[in-house]
Length: 114
Length: 113
Image 1 (cartoon, helix red, strand yellow):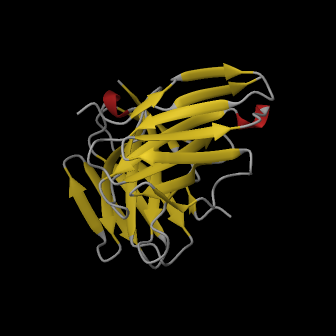
Image 2 (image 1 turned 135 degrees about the horizontal axis):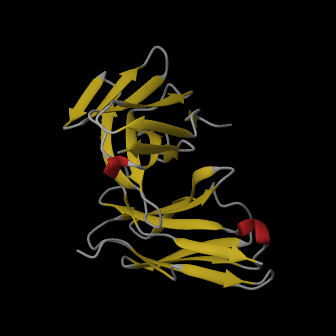
Image 3 (image 1 turned 135 degrees about the vertical axis):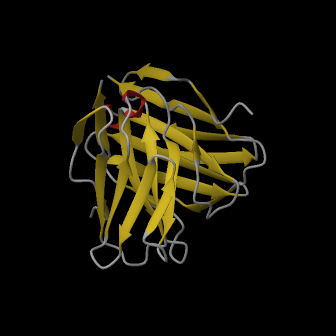
């Protein structure tokens, strides 16, 4: 199994631009999670899906952030418009069940907003 | 409000000695506690977990201890190896609540040869 796949691995963009991060979860996993890692706040959950349905988006910082999961094998996290404070590493993770102890993380996307 | 806290941002130990990483939490509803390990440019990987009904769980060189009355858990690595050098995240989960993993800030462990 290839594990959780994220693209791009690195993204550099200018303030005001739209950014789309992509994630392919492990096949057969029913839950998908988007995290953000910053020096100040550590690893924080932004949103998670179960069976493609958003369950909890309380961690999404503001309306500029949106996430979709159109099918079981693909999810996107979009930031529009992007701001310098959005610079962080964004991780996608998946698990077999919603309350599984173990989540499998992708390698992350390092986003830099200039 | 930081529900899971790792107060030591870094730890350095000599190869072969014991590494002890600490974690404190505030939410008594947490059912499970996990440790994740993260190497640079990679995502975190699951290391070991413990249920709130236990006070110890061991897996090879890794042992996690839970003190519920103190709301404290620790990860012991014995003996430490240079390959253990990484960032270690403590995480907690409440299945009765939202099922979300709440992570600590992480502790960077350096094991010197």
